[in-house]
View 1 (cartoon, rainbow, N blue to C red):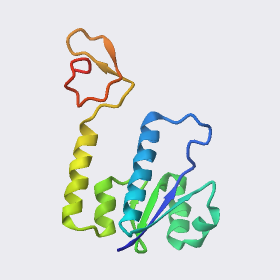
View 2: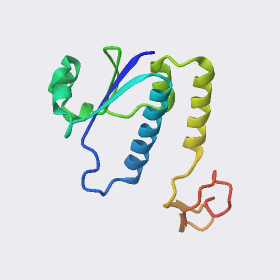
View 3: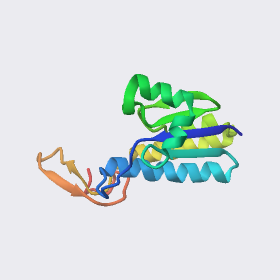
Length: 147
């Protein structure tokens, strides 16, 4: 299996995170855990906590020097930058990790389900009356209150 390094921006240190960012960070943590359980070497480095790791990588230093902190998160696989400025999808990480095709299908299907699910707690505009309605269920948009 391959070695994946993820260099990340400062997190939600204040405790108040944008729900979309929080959702992405939770997804990433689950995916990293899953890859590690499959024997993939995955390292995560936070700019606030792991400064020496940032300085130890020539690729990271060059990216930061030319593009600034906006290049984060930066994903390096086997010494090559695969992604920058946004977190990769689960399917991308699984491909880069060299997982077998049968596993890639699972991640692709999971990704489709995740993208189709509305975010809990966000208002959804009702097309009939133009008023906002609060959607706080975990449906796939077919419960009646979200559509």
